[in-house]
Image (tube, rainbow, N blue to C red):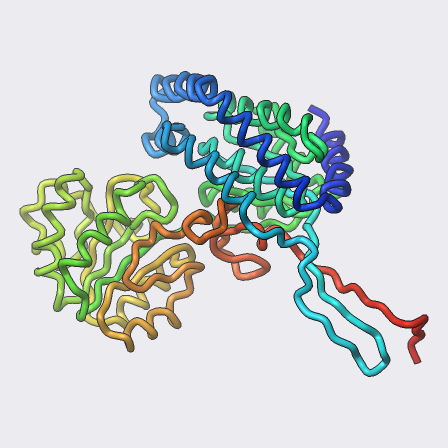
Length: 417
């Protein structure tokens, strides 16, 4: 595959897309949504065969879950496009305007980034989500999906490509690497002549590899250990459903609960109420320290190791640990990869405020499940990724995160003195 040609075509398309009207971009997205709906049965059949093959090869259960397109997930994917259509177009928005003493008028205006390369694993809905967000934000994209879901991703791309040929914008706004050769990833990471930004979406190893080898800026995110701290003032009955939701609503998600931290004053009563619910879902619990005594009769206890607290489980297992204070909880969270989504359950406003200011994660929650870290849930329509770095973009990345700005300056034939 000629990656230079792919990059060149994407760059040329980005110039056209940057000048496209909101109406034209929305029309293109509507074409994509319509075509996907028409081809739904075919897409689900392709995906089902690929999932069956993954099962026959004994791929990890979390990976199989992430790559599976259910009827509900397909509908959510298409609805995501429709939500993006409904969102305001960020391109051309004036962020500020002012005049300096020289008489120069200065405006700061939102513009697209240009060409975005996205490397992702497993989830086929990502192919559509990214394409939709890039089109609406005026960016061309080059997509590289995981080999385990290659046929589903390729099918989605080909359907979008056909839809775009009948739209007002160039079909080459969306590009897909049609080779599973890992060398293509390395080529994309060094295609700095054409690509402006790399966004990896997957596990920590993928992100570290991109940072190490890319000659293009990389946005890091999508991994991290998610914690919930149950404070001494927490309402136990109301806390249990939130904890269960954070763990089981989608265990393979990057924002699913990994470590439950419980204040000593609430440990016995919380586990009395929580353990039966955990048991219903056959959740393997790593009970650390004194929690092992409280949970000694729990049927699904796992062995504990020093690595547990730094493990993103992506499945039906979790840590439980007891602390003596909110300060101890914050110290634990800071120590163990708190960069993604972390929560406190509390009725104490002072402790809530302390937690908000002290926890370094991209998304911090008070009395809410960590599972809300999602572009759709944040009103962004969809997301490209969840950034856990601190520069440019952070948290779920929607349209605004795919833009930059330029200064537009004007004068009356003005010369600098």
